[in-house]
Image 1 (tube, rainbow, N blue to C red):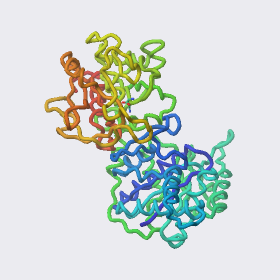
Image 2: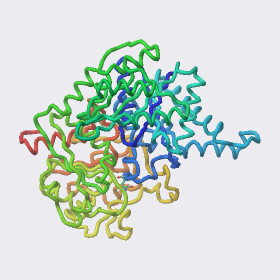
Image 3: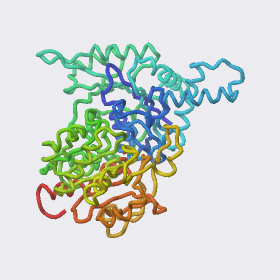
Image 4: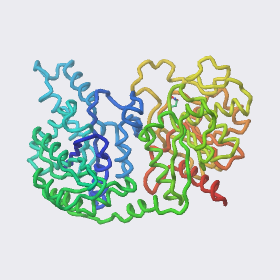
Length: 537
Ligand code: GLN
């Protein structure tokens, strides 16, 4: 097993996750089997208890793991399915060490950060990587070098490099920032020098530097960085601003990064196939048609809160034949001021998942607007529940219909707590989570889009359509064309008489991949194209 550790310097948000994913994609293009691990130095055991404003979307895996959104990038770039063990957090590591201490496993020793925490980290990385049967494991370290909370992780990976024969099985990739200053546009290397110095103080010498910069690095700047940081010039590469994240692998490939990594590890290429990926990245942008999708939610100030939807729309647009422009609309604004201009100009509308009461009435008003004006509509998870509430209120005349999540005393609880959730007190990892089978009704739109009757999709919810109201809802025209395997939980809704008014209790965005878009997002984009440009879908 070879390891590539990806660290970040200078500032956060440099696209470390995309660098890590792109390197993985490049190695895969040469026929190398790759897996990936994300380390998050926070104390939460997993991302499930965090608000999307903290670190962006909570990504959900097949096994129900609620993890950092970078695992979504790995799954999309590497076309693999990961498990929650691929996200290591400080909380997970300490929890396990403390449990071992309580059972007496340390035989009377003083339990310390070094070696007990660091050993735990090393063992976790090795066990997870080896279980996958991959040849290369990419380990991304969250946070920025110099943060107190990253220290035990950096120390652990420094030791791993020693343990595995210095430099033979481990490579360190450090991502930094090269700002451009002043009117002459000078590229500045000092932040990079300082962050490499910081890394070396911990005992880690980077092998590869990936510099984020607005422009490609000038030759003299690369030479300077190489000299000051003691990294060979061919291993100083630029990640200049790209059209989309899917172009980043090509940028790195052109600078010889794949060859460099292969040669450092002594790997031989079994393939050379980046063409399919290149063609896909091209299809995202090289489109004559453009459709606008409005995403109506309450985390709209941070695009990362809806990153899997954004990517699913890129995947869908590439295959449906349009560039998809997503505009964010704050549901609280709709609630206060009514249908906004962005909504009026949208070719399609998405109501994504969410929790809590804030902005709910704005979302209900949006669903009504889409239904009445026949705007292509997709509701996901909370969006599915919203569509149900709106229909009950405004079509079936159930005044005050609601979810008991928002109004425990509603006269028409058309959305209610799942029975198995009634006694749940602990909040972490207790929702209905992960991949669950869904039976799709033959002849439905969902069946046409999925092309099969049994699908596996990922879930994350506590509430569901109340079984007591299913019959009335269906009679009125809100048809449930997807159900759980036991037939009890409603999974997909389709509005009768509409071209595309579809919603799902599950999250199709999490399994969307380049070249294999989420069927429901594809359906929405296809309908949005028909809505804007006319013609049949
Ligand atoms: N709050 C809703 C529930 O718990 C929807 C969850 C979601 O959108 N992920 O069922």
